[in-house]
Image (cartoon, helix red, strand yellow):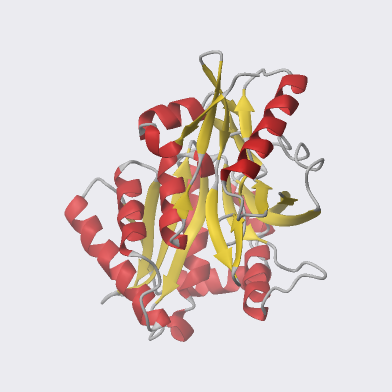
Length: 335
């Protein structure tokens, strides 16, 4: 098969995104903005590409060269890149042929890199709307030497507010009610750029204050701010009468939303416990705006995996929102 492999850097963001939207099972992770963010965050080289066959882009591959403990591999800083996706209505037999060509192309791309890590997200975009799907979940098994499934917590926003509230744990309900008497919920988007810019700088500063150091490259903050201006991100906060004490930044993609980055002001954290109130009101906001799903993040309570106690505690916190769990499949391919 005579295919051409067109690097990400040789394609405009507009052409890349237009091509991605013609692919089956695409998600926000394939959008050019998010690829740039993750590569900048991890300080790694972006080798993503489109596959062209008979004047059509038939596949998209997210590929980033990384290094861990002196071992070179393809994957983002958390270890994995989104798996290859293919043109809609492509015959299964043709898809398998393209997948083999892709793996062989990657093998010869850099002889020093000996493995690829891919994963599949359970929420994909179909007809410009998010849906729960197992598309592309199992096609990589034939190449994979080590597989792993980790569930992610997802709030179904098609439920009524009463049903969402019923699903909350008693602990979360109690903290939300207590905070609602003392805190105000705020929304910052591109409607007022000067206010947004000011609050975004405060959001950045709280990250520095909380960690005691710079937490990520400047370019990633620029991408996050530009995402808000492009309606691909939004910033929430909760405040007392005098100041903002907690921020939550969320990603947006075709009526799918997810918690991206959250930070509290430690000076007020124990007194107000703002996270419960902030995330609950974000969920209600997305419900009101017609979003279909809100992803809280992965469940790290997985047997035989070396997750930290902090990660496990965060999972337990997210679980109390009464969310449903859907599988993310992870694949390790030796080259």
